[in-house]
Length: 149
Image (cartoon, rainbow, N blue to C red; front, side):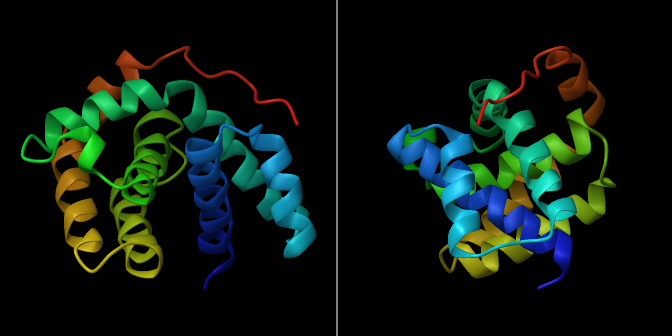
């Protein structure tokens, strides 16, 4: 895996555990890094993703639900939701990643961590949402807060 892909994977693991357990995200990150250390620059990128996604996750979920009407939100796996949340945050909110790159990275994460149908589902939802990047950005402007460790 490429270094930034690894950082995204770390953020995905933290966000997934956060969703399931409710443990503090900073604690989860610290525990993950004890198991599998990572370069500090990549840890910062993972932390940036976490700090960006968590405060707006409910609003991101509403966008996901609107763009995947055949899938009720409670039937979408936490892994798939978090992969989509990360990509949305990267291309629509932080704008640190070009749309095509964010979608490709999301599909790659879905291949590794999701089910057999995850890559296609993630690609379809993000493809639909990619046309609304500016709308998403304005909807979620000023929503970010910092997650304490």
